[in-house]
Image 1 (cartoon, rainbow, N blue to C red):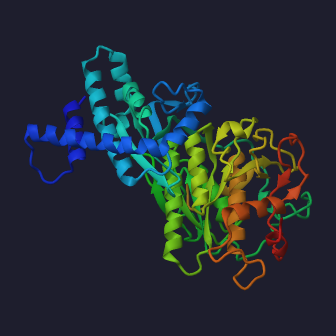
Image 2: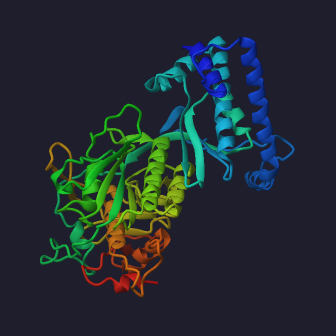
Image 3: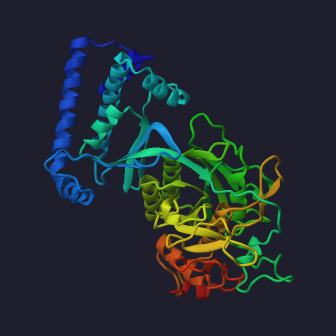
Length: 501
């Protein structure tokens, strides 16, 4: 353990690096003391502003206000897929950039102190466990990443000892602390079948021998729309994307800018490839949050959502001619994560039209994230015979269904590879493709159905998409689950869609 390096870096972070000169120790102590006093003053000043919110939260959580109020830890009762010693810390809304910065500097110093105590302790098992969990980052833990999505969700993630977490929880700027956990691609591999998904979303009636391979659509669908695929990456050189796919960002530390799994490429193909895509002119942006084995951390997924939301906002500010909006697809899931749900909700409020997979556990989708994010469109999987796929999650958190069994799309291995996959992972990109399709075909300013000068909002498009779907056609749908199948309008005039109530 290189403890001295960690402490030195923490002190330099607090003071600011003004040159390669080692300061006199007494000066360091004086300046450090001043910084700590300044931090505590800011924290104290914030107490009055958050007193009402803290009181309400404490009453809701059953906390005795005569004792120190600690921010709650979520996922505390779950050990499934928890990443040891890793946490997501979410700030209360409304804190300033300076407050966040001072807080993170304080956390760095607090973490260094905890590491020092660990070094002196005799608990070798804890030492080995903590250092093993941070080995990929070549550091001894602390803050790894920070995030801010549309000023609606901000915080950071990192590796911390219990003693540091307790102090973080006692800080009045912190809303809650979440144990970071694993998320997985919602793919469900089974035997090959027919490429029927596109045909199904373009027909009201069940497919027949004459319609199962016919996709009815507007050839301009997707034009001017950017679709962010938050997944394992995308094979951007695939011929099916015809130069419309590009690499956005790789979030997992040390991972390559490529799809080593195929899941993300398959989803991207369903959204916007030439032969297998719903919106054939959409631009595709790869946002890699899952590694080649199809798994990743909740905190990395939050960072991916942040990237997509900020990229969309940058595109809006750039006022590029012909730009009509942005969509996002997230065909992944894990246990319930308030941080991820809040991140998705914030991204939607930032203008990103979001589709997420309901999950493949044949359970209530409200138990998983991001399926339980209320602002997104949560998509269950249907079969070619118009039934809920046996693996698909259900419940009131599901908004709509789309084809998800034996779906043919783009893949990895070559620039022309394809594969059949099944899962709610395959259903969600059908809806993301529909969002991209409808966005590109939204009414012009002179139309009576024009929504606003900055385009249709995610809330309005979600409402119209659900209202325009085919009702009560699916079998094996529980009573508390919407029985709605996604529909694209069959290539006809979309006046009815924009007039949907």
